[in-house]
Image (tube, rainbow, N blue to C red; front, side, top):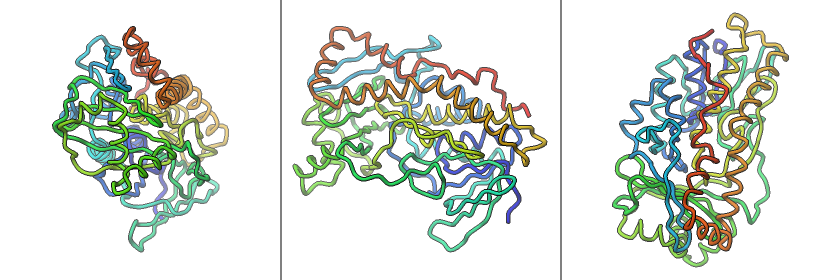
Length: 413
């Protein structure tokens, strides 16, 4: 049995790496288990809102990320049918040069995890959590080397679930397989070079049965990511039986969206199409007993608002704030149920204050723009009142400073 940890983090994406790094900065002994070798690409909109960059600076990683990231996003837009509308992106600080930017997860996740390792986190990669059992002082975890025969046993007072919302596994926070439904959403992403998309614009794209977005990312690439209903995806595949899923979805989008067709008219695919799903949007769980959930393991907003990375990083900050403030550093190995519940209640309260509106707004926008009639009506209104786009971006959280972490100081212990 390996020496005990204060916490084991399951998942090395933005939520998990952020949580591990923050707790390590505060003097905690942390292990992180990640099943995939980095660098690796993921289906993701890639945008990081302005309000998240101060938290990345606190981790000492913002400079390296900004050196790679794409251009500053100054405008949001809607491409729906023939409509192409844009308006200013909210700038919470008033300094537009600090607005959000995008970069690929192969860079973001790699640098975040490397920073966690620099801060003393033990990284187990590529390993998976294959078993978990509670004991008097926490948890005994069995981990297995992915693709190998090795296993290890780790002991921890706490576990932080930072896995994907649709992943299955040994954790109680892992999802249960559900029967297929026509409305299940599947995510697709690809990068393109030589796109005509304006450098400062991030448009929402609407098409029958789905929605998505485009943004200039790192390496002079444009990222196109989208979600499409299971039944609409099947229709796309029937229309182009000899094409793979990604190109079939893109053909469907371009057939119904002039803005995307123009932006990619001379563009070339850079790499391959990625897919994931079905998505599990909505509220999931804050965990139970000594297990806490962050990122998509806690909840997932519809990607239409491009807040996934920001919610991952920010939710990890909110949980770590509670853990550092409420857990006695001298007695981490003996945590009462009262202490655990106080942490969970504080975390849940600050989480809801920051993110509940984003969940509701993202669901509203998703169902609005997936429906052709509603999308046409919305686009018509936006053409006459483009300021509504700025307000909508604000409602989705892009103008909201993280509340609850104002006095968060990771040096306290």
